[in-house]
Image (cartoon, rainbow, N blue to C red; front, side):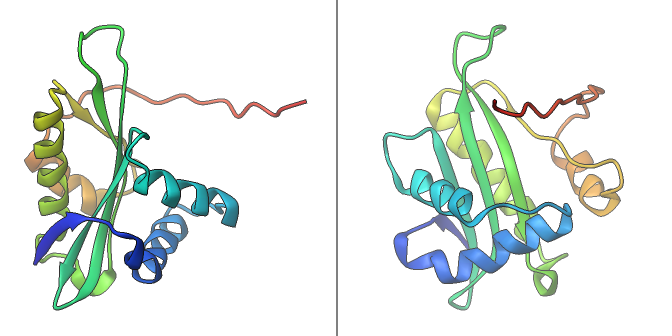
Length: 148
């Protein structure tokens, strides 16, 4: 298995993984948002990035992450926003390898922290997360704002 940055030719294999992630979280992402995110990942001026796990020429996992300011630290922190592995690849280390690759990217960028969130029902993923990170204890609140 190889972890690498995405390239423009990956879209046809990346998209089913992205759709699998969205299906898992029971959310619908408009086509134009998917396309915009994809273009941001490929734009070096953007702080958004995507890595993939590849095995035998097939993409089996993805991780999307971004860097942003933080009021408690001098350097930008890294938010691991999306992590997904294909069902047939689960339990083979792709998720852990993708997380560790983000850790390395954060270290190279001078970022002092990588963090993420998951749904409380995602027990399988949480068993991995408990091994590779510290549980912060924070609860996430959100409010959707409709534009006028």
